[in-house]
Image 1 (spheres, rainbow, N blue to C red):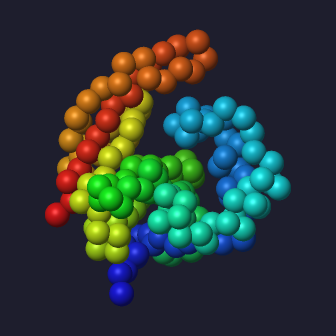
Image 2: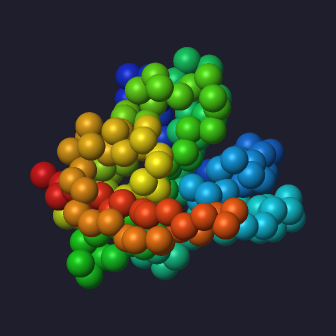
Length: 175
């Protein structure tokens, strides 16, 4: 059995009770640039998403897990595997720690380490990649610290509020 628990957090599947957290997160305009969102989500649409969250990663090519504080069981963020490609044994990884007071406390490190172990052992993935805006220095440091290598820069890849930004591509071969 693969353990999705770290010292301070654990990862778990989405539950119906996560609707309000998801609604708050998906409609936080400060996070839209990171998530690629450009319009608000209704609770009805998010409820439909939750109703289908049980679908298999091999079917929907994505897995979203809640990052929960082990002490009080509070949901503090989300971590995703996306663009799941079992033929080539790879997937993208994305993370958001939504609670401001939970940031810069090792939660991101622990969550990505747990997801990397899961990806390697349960899904037999060989590599993960991450796309990060060039000005998201916190995420860049996080992925570099975890052994992800910068393998490319996508020029003028992101457009937000009249400004083009580069996106950095990170890759990690799992072992």
